[in-house]
Amino acid sequence: MGKCIDNGPIESFWGTLKCKTYYLNIYKTFEALSKAIGGYIYSYNHTRYQKRLNDLSPMEYRAKAA
Image (tube, rainbow, N blue to C red; front, top):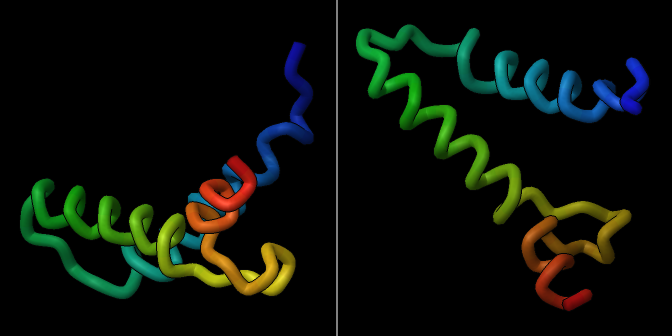
């Protein structure tokens, strides 16, 4: 059974996505918005290096752990 605290990480992700992508631009089409969201999600997983992951991106860290 889920608890409301479980929503914290995803709420943080969507809040950051909106601040860094959605609110900074005006999108004339849904496709442009969808492409921008896809690009943000890609960079979030592949180019966002983190100190707590030994200076690796999340995907690099997962690949190394596997």
